[in-house]
Amino acid sequence: MANLSIEGDSPEVVAYALMCCIASKKGMLSGKALITAEKDWLFTTYNECLRVARGELQSSTPK
Image (cartoon, rainbow, N blue to C red):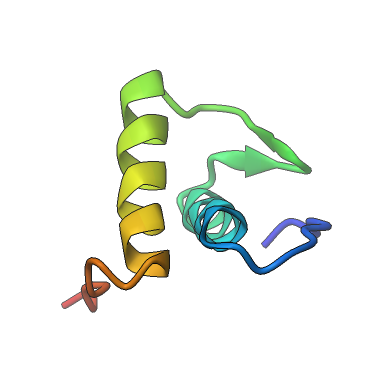
């Protein structure tokens, strides 16, 4: 994963960090910038990560 400097532990910060991890695994992150993310993917993924961070949704394990 790219080396990101993220401070804080709010659900929003945790969701952002999780989204960056996902983007990095998909090859969508270069340094600190999302390079190939479409707006729909960005909003949908962040929203799902935020729900996980808030405990509203359990993360799914890849099969």
